[in-house]
Image 1 (tube, rainbow, N blue to C red):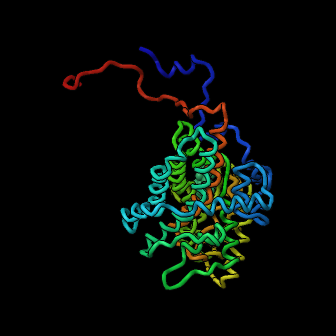
Image 2: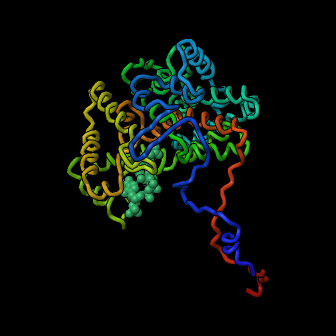
Image 3: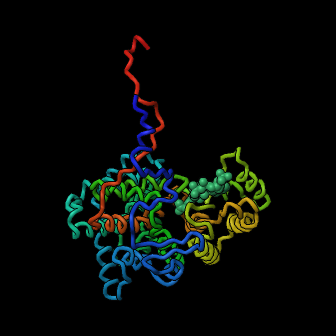
Length: 401
Ligand code: ACO
């Protein structure tokens, strides 16, 4: 009888790294993270500088092309994206096939994957021109598809893109306009939304990006790969955390209840975790959370919203940052901790939060996918396993068992 487990020992080097905590799956020139120092750079540029001084379209160009565009190049890029914002009219029938109360992420998994059926011409992954067109199509259509998911779930008619608006302004209008009242884009909200998109644009080899790369490594078309990324992002340990964080803050409700929840987070017999806290890579303040907290303050002030959950969030952060459990485990607020407060103030229902994350992360996903496909050394992703099942044994006919 062969002891299969012993075979591993006999075949030389074999690494076992569940959750890939210390295994690089690829090389990449897009995004650098120093988790101990709390540093995040896109193509070398610090995230706080990009969030404060740049625009989402500029960051999209940067991630896709490696350099910041000059004015003319940026204008051309924006025009290209704008030209692709429409989706095929027939795609609206896909939405009508879903239950009204379907989670918008469920709808997004379906409709983004379905784009492959509409754009056969840009599924040739070996043609760099077609790869570029597919990337532009995905970046451009995500706001339209996301706004349609929102409209469908709220029983309102779809709003078509208006190409004289900015990428973010157009998305806000498609989401919040109703037939009786055209949504007028408020520059403060537009700016905050654009920042949120920048802060979510890419984050090296996180679970959903790794999923996109793994799906793409088999040669699957880009629309199918991004749909796979959306499915992975939906999980509450990943993109679903912004929704979970806001629900948690609402559940806590008032500052006096915080100690009860801190105690639950520390209790190993309670599965509860402080949502929006902790990160696989950051063992320091998530630099995105810093910008997010400031943006939350600006938006609430501008809108004149006095939301008690913002106070709960700030107080919770302070208490956790001084608690020995959180200090020892290096648990700090992550990007999701404050984003829900802003999105809620703007008017998004919680189940749209992860959709907005997916919209922004599409830029990182397509940039990473392009980088992978262009790499001549790229192979199909095929992890191995550490087998723990029975050793070889003989089949016993059913009547003799
Ligand atoms: N609240 C309480 N305890 C926590 C938390 C938390 N939010 N996060 C981690 N811990 C504890 C764990 O219980 C564990 O304790 P132990 O060593 O006594 O067993 C220790 O810290 C390490 O946690 P792991 O789950 O092993 O760390 P990992 O790196 O695998 O997880 C993760 C990172 C998934 C983000 C985790 O911190 C978590 O679940 N956070 C809440 C969900 C969340 O906010 N996710 C968003 C991440 S950011 C993003 O996707 C954009």
